[in-house]
Image 1 (tube, rainbow, N blue to C red):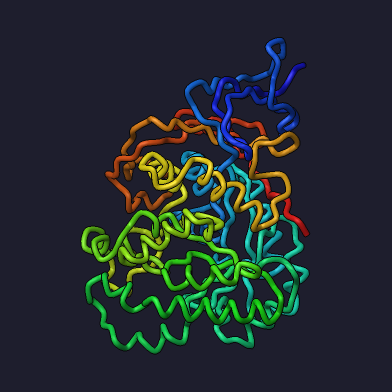
Image 2: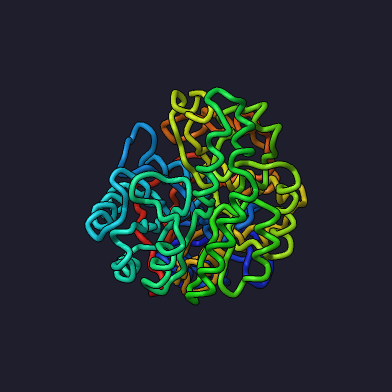
Length: 439
């Protein structure tokens, strides 16, 4: 038989375990897990010595498009993702203008078609004005979820009160994703701090109760309405313990930063380049995040890639914007954690492929199986590399992990049978498109 592409000689991470296999691809889909010795292909990728993973998904990024291309865009952000071994990203709606209507979704759909190197999903932002129409907006092509900013947002992308959140949850039926910090507590505590105070105050201002209170309120409303919700960037031991009892209604995301960095040390060494929301916390919460990864309470690990220019980041706290680059570095960091024994490779695949597909309703992605999209991330678990600012493709040109040595590196990014990245080089024109989600 003749295939479009054969991935030959790699160790494949299937849902049922690891095995060496030759994969055949036809028309952008996986056609065979057992290519015969007499079969041929238009293109053959030699994966000997590499692990073949389902395409890695970063389900939480801010590509700032529409916005300022000097900070980030779909073109540069998907390039960064592909270089980091990511085959799909889900892009947040807090752009300029925000993605909150059928018209802005249509504009963004055209931008994706023209510029994306990898596949994408789009969040649509909930506002008080568009709440009655969310049931229709969540059915638009390429929409992965409704996003609610219950804290830490500006303009109309803020719904902080229970009445407003409940109205969102009663409009539509798909899972709703939340930034769940409690805005009322944030504002009440803000006068306790002054401009120019040390950056470690970021985790003191946005304390554990700020996150936990927001998550408790959203959980109660999810149970009241019967609507499934997804708590983004869960960061505290209290939240993770609480959510274990509410799995019927709530799924959980943890960020790679909360699995990699620890306060107060990170603020002492990085200053504003450790400032993000929710904040990086102390070792008690770091340990709790890892315990939740190990016992299955975490469904998804993402980056919350949110670039800002250096001149903005280097303003005094709290005037420096919260947000860090991450889409290009998440997989090398997680592979390093695999090599350190903190999680297995199969658990990583669950968190960054099968998990996002399950939570968001991706129909043909997230696993190596016949009929699924031919999305592959090829990794060398033994490769030792240094993450450096000059590797970062985002125009801002920095990473909080500059100088970090890691073991494990993405060697190829393949999207629907198209080789997009190979050996640290982009080798494809933009071929990304919006994914299909369950209605």
